[in-house]
Amino acid sequence: MQSSHTLNQDDALEQISQNVDFLTQQLHRGRRIGRFPRLLEHEYLRARNRRFLEIDRRIIAGGLLFYLAFCWSDILLGGASAQLLVSLRVGFAAVLFALLWWVPRSFLAPYMMVVAAVGVFAAGASVLVFITLIPAEMRFAYHLGMVPIQVFTMVALRLSMRAMLTVSLGLFALYVLLLLLQPLQTGQAEMDQILMVFVPLFVSFWLMLIGLGAYLAYAVESGARNDYVQNRLLTLEAVRLKVLTRQLHELSTTDSLTGIANRRYFEQQLDIEWRRAIRQQQPLALVMIDADRFKDYNDCYGHQQGDICLQSIAGVIAAHCQRPADLCARFGGEEFVLLLPGSSTADAARLAEKIRLDLAALQLPHERSEAGFCTLSAGVAAMIPAVGEHSDELLRRADRRLYQAKDKGRNCVVSA
Image (cartoon, rainbow, N blue to C red; front, side):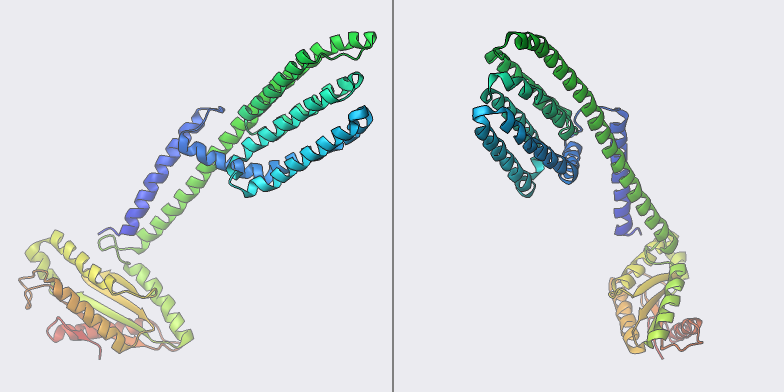
């Protein structure tokens, strides 16, 4: 008889093995940033979002402080629009700071990466707006301001190549549109000639920066995805090892036929409970149970049916182990033991009698038994052990009373 607990562990191992095989297949795909299958992708994005909230939110906060620090350029270069530029920059930063505090606490928390991408794009777009507000002769300085915006985009959105590329290319497209609508000119011929050379170089440099950012984001994201899968594998292997260790322990302490504890485990627990009873001066009861005329049962019905009979007896006994410390075990052959910490002889005898009656109620056929069905005999003993006494004495007392039950005609419980 295999316990449901063992079956559950087998099911758990099978599920773990399937997950390990699945994750191993994902690893064999190599360093790619393609989406995982749906469920794994969802779990990965949740993990990435947690990391983003723990680490990258601080990076974004630092970027916003850096963004605010350029108020000095608004004051020095803004001319008549200086006050407006400072107000716009401070107001915009305040909104982003508020969102940075609120979003992780709101329903938008699972979409923090998307919100961050929108925020970075808005910050870059604000610089393009500032370009249109400052005097023409100073605009080239704000064009250079797009470089730190691009660098910040590469850093803040490095965990998502798609987000980084989308924001970068979106800002680049807006910048090109701005150049078409408002060419970079200062009104000074010599300076305008320099800017005619500067703009193509700057645009080329920006495109190279975007390309570099795409490569770095690819490396970071693909590495993060592989690390996530490897960490999941390590976690699953640890769980599998834990389950296997538990199974090994159960195999060493459980009777394979009946699914209850074996003699080895019983003897370990008897020693533990004996020492506890000595410390606490509490009674420790033991019931020894033997299936009546079991050899005749095997001879009549065969060993396979005999095994089924033993499983039924074990099930009846186990059903009466209600307290956490109660233990039933197969002692050997057709003999069983019931260890009852804190129980008196009378309590243990009443429980043994219930077990005897419950087995009789099953009416398991046994034509060579006096009753015509399977019965059992039980010997009950209880002691409050003293220092220097050994648990073997409790076993001897219970065994002696079991034999008294046999001598009285079987199918009874003897406790005195």
